[in-house]
Every structure is written in C-alpha cells, then in structure tokens.
Amino acid sequence: MALRIVLSVLMTLSIIACTPKETEYPTPDEVPGTYVNEYSADVADPDEGEVIGNRTVRDSIFIKHEGDYFQVSNRKWLMNDYDGKGWVDSLQGERKPMETYDAAYDPKTGLLSPLIENSAAPLFIEEEKIYWGELRALEYLKVSSF
Image (cartoon, rainbow, N blue to C red; front, side):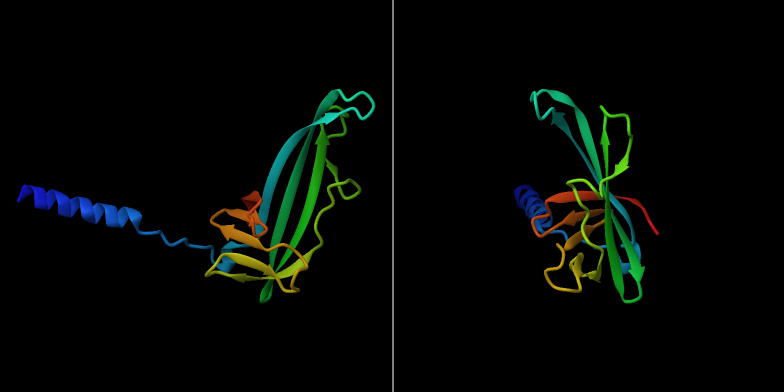
C-alpha cells in the first residue's frame, strides 16, 4: 500500500516536471526601451601583429511605440583602451548600425517583425531581453524603458 502511494506521488511529480512551461512574452506596452549588447576583443597592430590594446563595442537597440507599430533603431559606439578617445560613435567605422525600420509585435510569439519583409532581421523578445535574428545570435539586455 505504501509503495502504491509513493509511486503515485512520484508519477505525479514526474508529469509536472516534464510538462513544458508556457513562455510569457511581454505585452506591447512593455516592449519599448533601450536594449544593449556589449563585447570586447583584442586589437593587433596591422604591421607588427602584436596586440596593442582592447576594443569594446556597445551595440544599442532603441524601440519606440509609434501608433500601431514600433520603430526600431540602432547605434553602435566603440572604445579603444589604447587611443584615449573614449566612447566614439561608430557610424564611420566598420561596425555600421542597421537602418531604422518599422516593425509589428506579436505578443503570442514574442516576435518583432519588420513591416517590409527581409528588410531587417526579426527580433525575439523574452522578459527583459531581445535576441537578434532567427538563430538568436546576439542577446541584448534591457537597460531602460521609454
């Protein structure tokens, strides 16, 4: 009898543990804000090949609510620890930001899709994070809300 009770409890717990949890995506009012991905890499002297310092890239995505859709824009800043310039806008650099575009948000899937097909990579929104592209290659953390 005790064995049956223990087995019943274990079966119930295993069913609960194996049931997939439904992801809750942000509401359209929770989407707007600034999301940031920051990464660093060593920089080598092109002539000598020796590492001369470190470059940090701060990639920011800005999402604003514009009527029935969202406006998505992007800025990138660079900082080299060896040149003393501090944070500089990378518009002129090799890490050009993406073009500003309008997007629709589906709160059932967390997908922020460009209104013009294939004009930009989709963004996937989960809680306080955004993932770039269908492969979710980059993760951006929400740092502020509008």
